[in-house]
Image (cartoon, rainbow, N blue to C red; front, side, top):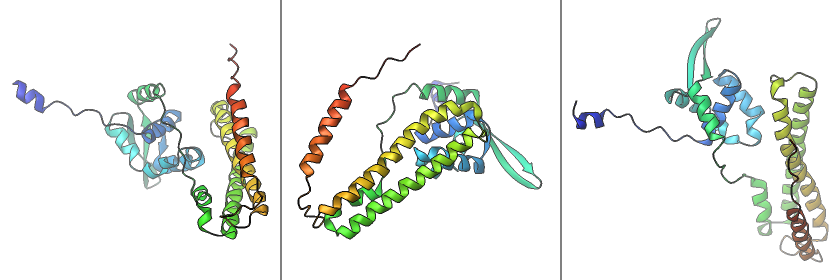
Length: 229
C-alpha cells in the first residue's frame, strides 16, 4: 500500500464534544436510558443549571454512539419498540477526563432581569409587574425544589446512592432561588420612593451601591477553611 493510499484511509479526527455531550454521558454513567427517560430526567435535574441539554436530547445520544462512547439497543414493550442507550468503557474514560478539564465561565439567561435593566424606557407599573413575575417564578422554583428534596428524605428517590451529590448541588440551587426571591421583594419595596423609572426621587442609590462594595469586600477577605481529612 502506498503512502498516498494510507493517508486517504486515515480515520477522521474525533468530533469535538460539547458540554451537553458530557451531560448526557453523565446521565448514562448512572444507568441505561431511553430517549424519553433521558428527557424526563433532564427536566428534573439538569434543567436547573444546564437547560440547553434538553434541546440536544435527540441528537446527542446518537452522536455518542457514533463516537463509540455509548451503545444503542432495541427493546420492545409489547409491540412498541424503544431504543435504550448505555455508556461504554470509552465513554466512562471520556467523562472522567472531562471532569479534569477547566470549566467554562458561569453564564445564565434571565430575560426578566434584562427588562429590569432597561426599565427606564417604560413605566413604573411595567417595572413592578416584572419584579412581581420574578418573585413568583423564584417562589415556584423553590416549591419544586422542596418537593424534590422531600421525596429524597422520604426515601422515594430513584438514586439513593447519589443523595450526597444531590444535597451538594441542591444547596447552591436553593440559595440562588432564595437570593432571587429576596432581591425581588426588596426591589419591589424600593419603588415606593421612585417618581418614575427615570426619576428615583429621594431613593439613596449611592448608599445601596456603597453597601454592596463594603459587603463584598468583607466577603472576599474571608478565606474558606481548609477541608478536614
